[in-house]
Image (cartoon, rainbow over all chains, first blue to last red; front, side):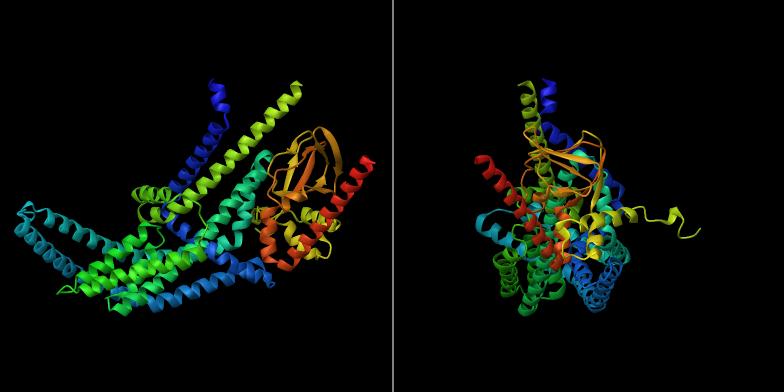
Length: 361
Length: 163
């Protein structure tokens, strides 16, 4: 009975799959301090690799083309930082000073609403102190999120050193390193492992390229929209909307929060501005869903929306923002690996059974 | 310590002798006709050499194929339903259909001697085609020619059997 269970293709697949998960988890723990630069470098590698291929096609050696790609990356980063960082810092600090005003404005609105409910329905919500409690909580969360934002800007300098170095070596050596790792596999699984790897790599590259292009388009569209309706810090809000767009389904909802809060912060409350902020996000989302997603990342991942949402929530709970961003590629890769393993093990089992039957005859 | 000292060598760099020899072998096959030796040599660097013991299966009929295989040394038997289809030796290649379609292998391949085989994977071919489309197109044309010749040969055999 036990032998039947252990020999079953499903249990064999599960065993190998779980073993792989354990190895990957151990590696992730070991590389924890470098995980963010590694993830960013891999994302950049996926985007820059085609550029390096173009250079190679024009006769440049692997070394020269990798170096050219690195120089282009550094140049783009330097120009972006020199142009954008002063704006970003000033918009971030103005947002930090603006936030208490925003919360006060929202609190006074909440109080007015509670008094209105108390007058018309006879319910005393304010006396319970719930409103105050939640506003205090939200205020704390908002402040800490902005402080986190400032910390990210500081950590950016560390990333700026590590990411170009990692990216250069990935563009130059990744293929060779990957070949040698996969060549260590036994003969019996060598081809199948390559097939699975190729499917995973292809899907990941498509997804990363797609989502980065999508985020850039979203950032530009949201910035223009926020600027047009006269919202404060349009560039920062657009950038946040683009970054949050890296998280499918949940990101666009989160992107709506800050612009709406800022619009609510104008005293007296300008309902037109609140509506305009929501309209900008909705319009950008509509364009994203109708034009950008179908042309840029359609079919990049083939997962059920429920799996995507649950996955994002679990990964977000475990690993924070980065967890939410990497949830989809990780789940989708795990899906391909599991299916590939299962298909391979099942085929071998059938072949073995056929062979045994032929031998008996 | 000079740069020629083994400690400073790149452990991942493929052996030059093997690259030259395998390049020569591929260049004598119809697959690399009208493709420069330099281009073939660059491609050989991405290929995967593997050692097989006598009697070891290279692949089974039903396995999903992912590569074409060149025999660098040793010998391979190709069998279908226990019937010997071909006996191949150093310089021969097999499994080229897997470079074109993602379908199961239609025959078994077994090493009849200790062998060194060079695998050229479809994923490497895809990368090469993207990097060098003109050479990739020529390679595809050469494969089509080989497959057409084999199909013609099989048709003649079948018609002879029927007659």
